[in-house]
Image (tube, rainbow, N blue to C red; front, side, top):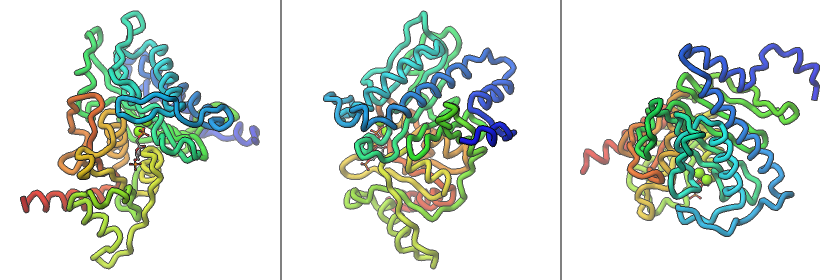
Length: 341
Ligand SMILES: O=P(O)(O)OC[C@H]1O[C@](O)(COP(=O)(O)O)[C@@H](O)[C@@H]1O
Ligand SMILES: [Mg+2]
Ligand SMILES: [Mg+2]
């Protein structure tokens, strides 16, 4: 590593510095949010190093437990969950934690409590762990009023009320993508420095894309509008070229590519799973928040995804997110279907 080159760089913006800059925009702030984000970053670094050496450290394979979703937990699911719960509680800034891996919400004991609620998917893309394909962590942050006794209702809120959202992708490089409500920025971990460096400033998703991303294995159970849309991607009727199919099977990785290249990622409802597969609080909402902040859209098949109000912490929802014009096309197909009914 050419540290001399690094030393000469003037645009060396670390995520810590970025978050502190954001804090200065809020003169009333006491730094609680900055401390919370730094603990999330710490959790990501820890999980990143565990993922990198998963094969060596016998972190491959099943943990022998089943989570509330009825999924067999992977060892890395359990480890990542423990890491984030510890990092979030030890920040002293959280009051409620909702994790994909925990059946109930975790209420932080009063002596360690703060005003932030964090919803998170500690390890996303579990089916790809054992083959070393990109996986990630997804998180969203809500805030409650100072001194209010936290209740689960504080997280059963529309996604539009989130304060911030992000994901960390553990792939060929480790990339953390974050929005605190004023645009989207991407930071890459420099392993030699142990620092996330700003590498993707102010990400804007292309207005229209050439890629569609969906598990076509579910096609026979899809509804009319989804089938029509995927058919149009393959056999466009407007003389344009067919879109390319890209599907990794890790939402973080599929959404990361969509954010940078454009196009659309969809996990629709189908006859087998009428509410789709992906969870509202810690998958759909954070990714929809980022997509809208980057100029894209997120739609459920019925409404703007961020206007959903979950009834339970592990609720699922169909999701269509990505480039503005591509999602507009899908919305038009659902509107036409509704008109027919
Ligand atoms: O295998 P399928 O049905 O295509 O589902 C893949 C989807 O399921 C997920 O793996 C679910 O997330 P978890 O791995 O966190 O449970 C998403 O990352 C991904 O988009
Ligand atoms: Mg997930
Ligand atoms: Mg998961």
